[in-house]
Image (cartoon, rainbow, N blue to C red):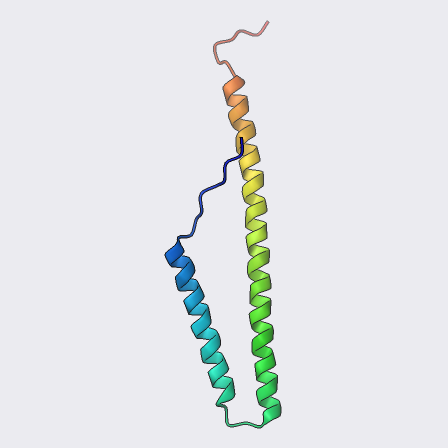
Length: 95
């Protein structure tokens, strides 16, 4: 018997997060493009922005993977406890 755990986030939260991320990246990119500096500092800042975005995705994936691993271990432990409780008869006499 395999059951999928219920999703913790709603579609609205997912969409809001995506829009927020897009607005932040566009605003930062717009700011880098409109800085009154030469091409080398602008390229450095653009590369820094790209690095920040990719490292953010990597961090989010690591956090998600850790959370999923914890959830699986927690479900297995809960299943073991449920099995022990189902098999336990408090009125049985030993001996």
